[in-house]
Length: 474
Ligand code: URP
Ligand code: ZN
Ligand code: ZN
Ligand code: ZN
Image (tube, rainbow, N blue to C red; front, side):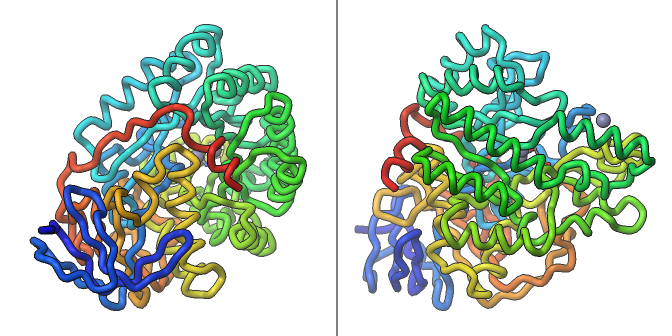
């Protein structure tokens, strides 16, 4: 058959199976899986003792978005996708953010413009609707969904992004009518404002106040309300970045009522706690993200949610800001008051090694669950499956080869993002990706970049695929 590449002697794992197989690649696709592939191939990659996994899909990544205070994120598409690639990912899904005073159409054009030619991984875009004006809901959003922007994030928090209940319902209704998937950031902004004012009145303005002004009840209430509003419209939804047991229970109860809901958690809710925000000086700012990290009991609840299927998705919510400098977490206002610390932490490169080491290698989840929650379910939820997210004949040859025994300690100097720190600095992890292929091209080989800027491509989606379908199969 004259294959381009054979990946030999590895352990191939998908969301359902683990097999000893060789993988034959031709024309960017997986064309054959066989126990002992005898063929002329231009290249043989030896994967003995390694796992051969679908490239990671990180469906929750922020790139080049401004914060509420106009501070720009630390990653553009070049650094963001390079960092993702080294972390074992072959597709990421960032957002086209409509600003409150901007329109959706120009947001889509702007993000495409800055991504063009700047990709090391494939990319599909979600939309963020921050101003559901009659023009946006009546024309721009339906047109965008028809053009393949079939997933939309809305916020119940952040002064500059939040939608009120009437706006949520109206936006949900358009998504329902046009077949889009809704991702919801669930935190009650009015409750947060109330607590922020109380903290400020008491002089509690250090980074740790970020956690105490966004307690579990703030997230639980908004999760319950989002689920109720979606139930009223009969809209399938994704509850993103769930941080605690109470919110997970809301999701389980909604499922028991027959609601179509899927949910996501992130590394920060497994690995960090609110204590990290209480560091020396303003170091706690490095861990400011929303919802905030909780405590050891909630970390266990998040592990349980991955084990029992409450969480189908494990994403990074990579949202990188520098720590130092006037344009980072220590900006002049942010260095005085927690409410001006831009929200979000970097993590696209450490997402998979964290779950592999702490999950698979420590026996909390099996390798098939790892593949499901880091790749396959993302492709299914957002309409990219089976082109992406699995190792099967006909799928894109997006593959990460993992050394399950490789031990490395996280150091930001070894990472490839545009931030100046990692929240996981000093964490020793066992199991790292060493070689990554994108559509059959070796992009990273034994830890060294071989791919070129521009090798990644924009992935156009079609409407109608995605969440409704996957939930109907359950
Ligand atoms: O703090 C966070 N998570 N910032 C990123 C934006 C979001 O809410 O996902
Ligand atoms: Zn969010
Ligand atoms: Zn996010
Ligand atoms: Zn501010």
